[in-house]
Length: 139
Length: 300
Image 1 (tube, chains in turn yellow, purple):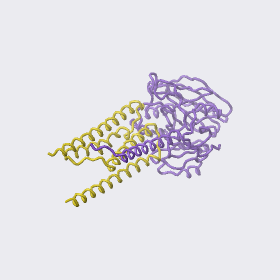
Image 2 (cartoon, one colour):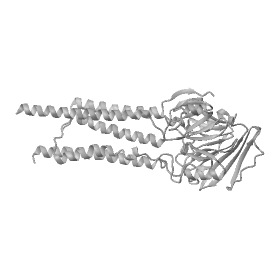
Image 3 (cartoon, rainbow over the protein chains, first blue to last red):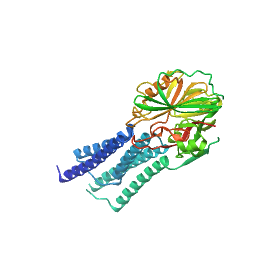
Image 4 (cartoon, chains in turn red, brown):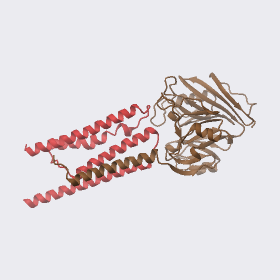
């Protein structure tokens, strides 16, 4: 294993830890909110923690195990904010449900998260292709 | 780890601001920004009728009577809960009326039940279905259609011009048709509790994801011109609150034939002759009368 591989693993593990912390915070927040919601519950509030866990912790852990290159990029930033939009949207929807109301504007969270996710994936693919080309040119 | 460049930092700040702004806008739109959509337009009691026999004991708190309207305010103690019942007899169903907060139909336009009741000169009033908390569901008040968009998951209580009650599925009904068929009021909350004396709820039914026992508000019909407005306390040390089934069972026990669950929890408030008679509360500790969108009341 090369030093760069160890660095990559370490970086991915730091990201894993960050996503796990966010997930734990959401679980705690949802739990406390439920305690004070007079027995009214919302699945959106209870399971908001699943977004950072499934979309953040798991992929980061897999990339750490595979020692995939870990870089700070626009694609990654957008991906993180896509997860954040989905998580915050889920919590807000939970708040509305527990209050007993709804909002047509909730669709904005879905659109924001979807657009950010799509752009981040497109950027990641674009960056990957660019990197492959530059490697090929160097050879 | 490679640090963010200046562009990267700007990107992160921009995305953070976008998310904060989106969240703030949704919450403000839902809870704060007022959406005013329309301004509200808006018997000799059958004493020969023999009162229905009641198996439950109650304390008569007060009574009101004139040529058109008679109300007996009763307090029951059932299921470890204080239950307030306004037993109403009307010469004409037109005295069963509704009022909107600030006489305006819209979202985030709210007023306390007691304030609305005071303003319209109600003899007795309870909170309505809090239509403003939802974006869908039929809203017909005093013969005016305010919202025709159905909430397909919910049942609607329709009170017709002749004073009859009908509980309908919004999935299979159009608000315009209800109006044409003589609907005077249509509420969206539910569920229906009793229809023609039959239970419409079972022991496990609840309002969406609510807890089992809660303060409740309900409206019922015993016979022509004979109605019930009910509010039960809950969440407190002295009143546990009712499940929907217990509410339906209690209403059936006092002779109600058709009954419908209105907005409960912290909204449950009964006003009678200038006073709130129950203990409205959200947290079970403090008296806190919630501001709501609408009331159902008896008056001229």
